[in-house]
Image (cartoon, rainbow, N blue to C red; front, side, top):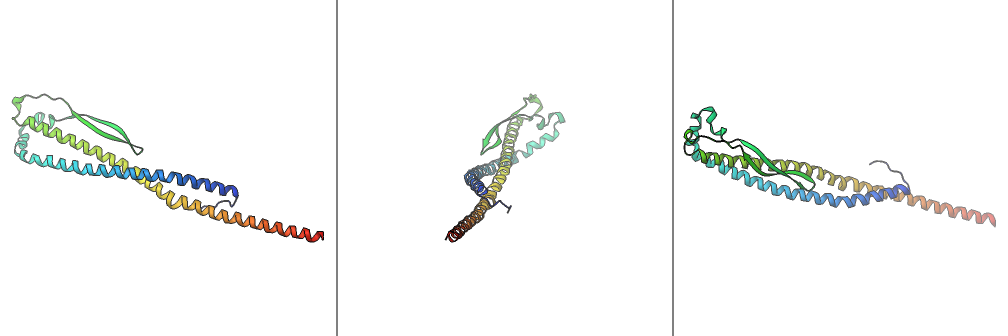
Length: 205
């Protein structure tokens, strides 16, 4: 604990600090609760979306045979050349003082192809692959949100602990120590005054 001056001015200073700490702590605690609540929701959505992605990917099992045909296409005609992400649309949102990206949409480059070059299933394959790509982007955005909010939650938790376990107890202890010292000084001054008064009275007799 840092040393403090045992004076009335320092006593006032410590009392003012304590008031500020006790006023600020509930705000920090509220922010911590908000962050925890939002992160629980994001975690739940992440789990739900990841299960959805697994379902969509496993749904491709029925397509394994037809997707195998992709290998026989020329390099410039493989399926991946028909599914090219173009632009990710994200907005910014403020959550408990933290600016996070919010996924809105993923657009793809418009690629034309000759139907004669592909089997009938290619349109459905492109639709499914685009759907999976969009879901992947949503998941990645949710993970970024979780990371940013997690970092803020750790910092906020550290501040709450600092105020609860260090700053407020330290200020209270300083107030107690200074109060005792100032009280003792005042008592000593009163006693000295009485002794001096008694001596003056005795001298005047």
